[in-house]
Amino acid sequence: MLVALGAPCVGLAQAASGKTDAATPAAAALPDYHPSMGDLMTMAVQPRHIKLGLAGKQQNWTYAEYELSELRNAFARIARTIPKYRSWDTAAMATAMTQAPFGALELAIKERNTTQFAAAYTQLTQACNVCHQSQNHAAVVIEVPDAAMFPDQDFRPATR
Image (tube, rainbow, N blue to C red; front, side):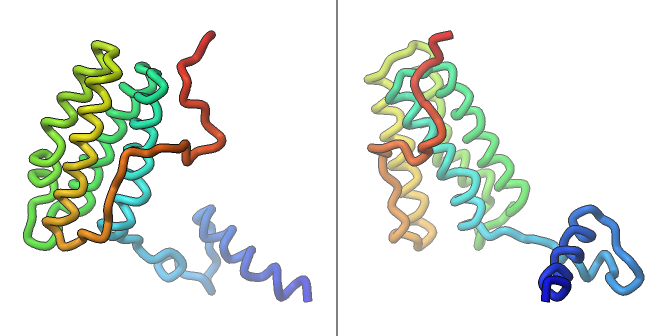
C-alpha cells in the first residue's frame, strides 16, 4: 500500500527536479501554466494593495514605499503576461487607472502624511473598482482593509 501511495510523489519529485526517465517525457510532465487575469489579480495585486493600506495605516512609511513599488511591479508583470485583456491594452489600461493614485501615494509616503495617504489610498481603491466595472466585473468590489489579513506579519514600523 505504501508503495502505491508513494509512486505519485516520486513522479512529482522527478518533475520538480527536472529529472525524468524514458517513461516520463519532460514536456508531458509539466504543462505550460497560463494564469488568468483573475489569478494574477488575486495572487499579485490584491495582497500588495492590502499590505500597502495596512502599512500606511500603521505609518510604516518605509514598508509602504516598498509595497507601492511592489504593486507597480505587479501591474507591470501582468501587462507582460497578458498584454491584451479582451480588446484592451493591459499596460495602457493599468497606467490610466493607477498613475494619479500612485503619484499621490508616493507623495503622501514621502511626506509621511497619514491624511494624504488615506485619501490617495481611497483614490486607488476607487480606481480598482472603476476598472472592474469597465471590464464587466462589478461584483469584484475592493475596499480599504480594516483588519490585517496577514497574521504572520507586523505592519508597525520597526523599532530597531
